[in-house]
Length: 96
Image (cartoon, rainbow, N blue to C red; front, side, top):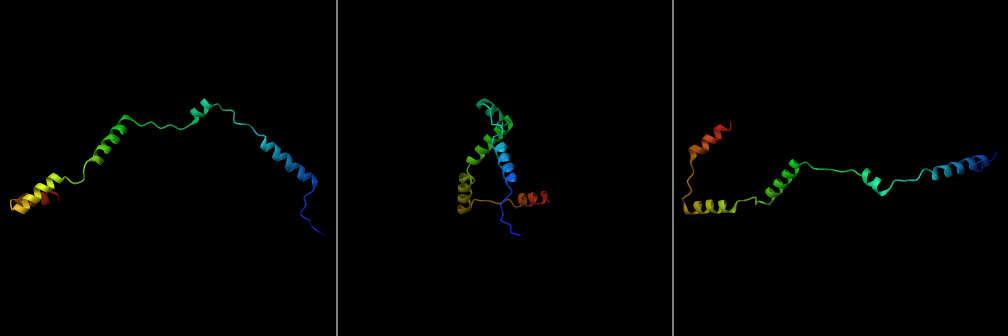
């Protein structure tokens, strides 16, 4: 017995009809305004807008306060920078 790989004629007709039905399915009949209604939408609360504005303001501030650094550096170089060891010890102990 030889098998040629050809399908019987009635099965080929069924496949063609199935493809026609699938391709002639329902069309998208939504109008432009209906499509707009179907899109996702995000709204931020007033609180989140305020937080975003504050974060933006914080990000624009310099990381290093150069005026303070300059004043401390000058005090150290001139020998006028005094360290209160008692305050440092109190702070260390209060954090324990």
